[in-house]
Length: 134
Image (cartoon, rainbow, N blue to C red; front, side, top):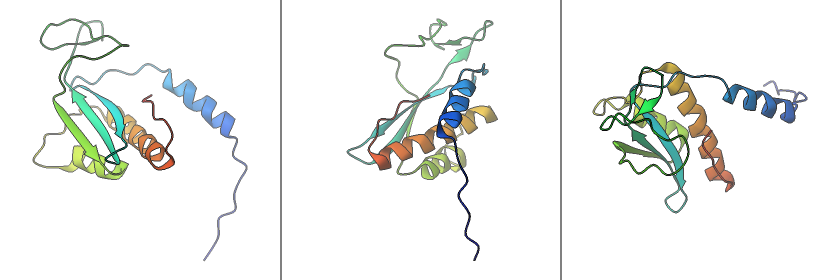
């Protein structure tokens, strides 16, 4: 059995790159968006799905009113579904692989983003640290 030799990892450089990449433009998924949070009492990662439409300016809008959704502040709209999992993998399987529930994601980059966020949420759940969605 071969043991991997640790390399020098520059955590600051990795964090800087990650912050830079988080500022890039992404096209919004017309099938909706998710708000991710932890339910620490139940030891669950939770993902509320909200529907939206995308207007001609590329802004996410409330499908009922047609008004752009606020970027900051409280979201008072009801979610269309709530997904939960004990791990990032379990949550991804529930959202992407459950045949009885249509997958509420139409863009692969959105799916990749969710996978990354679910792993971050899982690590925060394990470590007891704060989780803030990127």
